[in-house]
Image: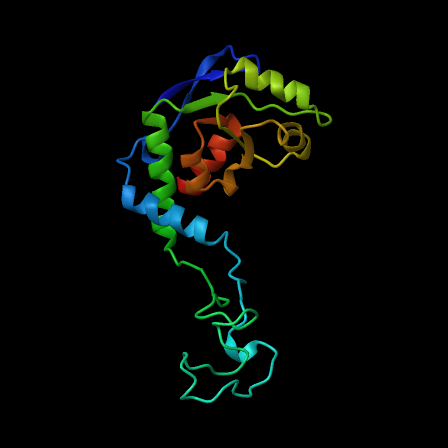
Length: 208
């Protein structure tokens, strides 16, 4: 698949870049994508939620009233869940939300997401760029020149450059990732995927 390369001004650089069909042109596997997205979202959960149950609440274990003859419901101790300050019934407990996924399935999911994005015309290829120092205004000019204002744009770079990351992190809708940090969820969430030429080479080396 041949795609025109654009520069930071949003104009054609006069050459094309080859996106291999083995990565950007496969038949998307929706189930693999679903599994990868599910794994990513569940791994964002810490699993540290906890509430005190009846046996963990501080208080006397003395029975409040006799079992029968009161004309009311039976009552246990003051830690009963029916009382204010009592323990919670079936409250949340710490748990592990880890979901295991085979490497081949994760790779298939990522390539499926990339292929679906390419088929929808949601991929731009641009020249590698860098900044001497963080420049949010300069990065915003790039976003505007690519007509990505108001869209969720994911910029994928070949290497991690702190100046580039710091330039774009405060722009609404813009996310910057290295090629090796790219995941299925981030690809699916973005409206437009902006691939730097160096990132494409990294992706080829990972999935080639």
